[in-house]
Image 1 (cartoon, rainbow over the protein chains, first blue to last red):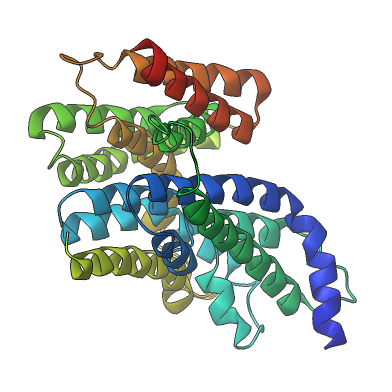
Image 2 (cartoon, one colour; image 1 turned 90 degrees about the vertical axis):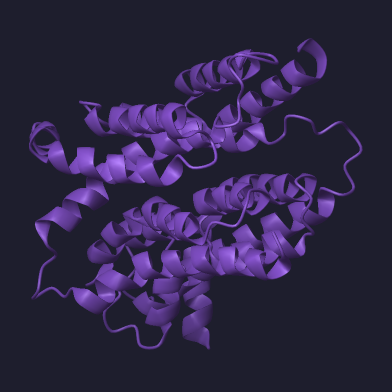
Length: 233
Length: 108
């Protein structure tokens, strides 16, 4: 018991920036769901089971459209594809953590990954419990934020028209961060141009599957130049 | 959508997420390294995907009618400038959203 307590005490300060970020984004997500016509139960259960901010926002938009299971699944796979990379990086670090490993993998969102991947865990702290604490705390912040937002959404009295732009703003910022990180912008441009072209050709109802096919093809074709530009860094 | 369709949609999102999180642990080990192509995709896709998601957010903007997408354009430029200036994700998102809300409620 003391071991677990010590792990949480060591993990908590590391998660404070996430507490700030998740309270804000989770809360916005909850409010966004609520003004889109969903009860707080939706953001609560979705943040609990999906636990991935970008996809949850997109899922909200998909829930408002018509039922398209194949497109939903493919989009979810592509949006979450980066986790494949996290998993590979964590193969060794999650080793020997027992049953906790299942939850560590389940809750491996961007933020939990980056803390658990980079944290210098003091030698007197149990590694497995430390990473478990980081993951659980982040999960808790996110679910709490989303649920409170979902409840608060119905209490808001000001005009919320335009609030849905929070999703656009969020993806703009993440995209910009990706852009600034790269020397060459091949793949960023592939993403924007493929989707814009497919939107024009296929229309807003059915452009996502062709877009994803295009992105996979072009990213594969551009492998040589992209890898060369990364190698130069 | 019916309730069942909604449940399926959410379950598919959760299942796809779990697939991407669990797959490396099921398939790869330190002894059996990851195929280079998969590693490449993990590295190269995010920029493309977030570009795609920005366009996805704008899919229902009518450039030819209504407000011609001008509030969206201003909102995105404002968000980006705010972000380049302060480099603080929360300020950029909150600022961009408020700016857009003011535009659609009072200007357009």
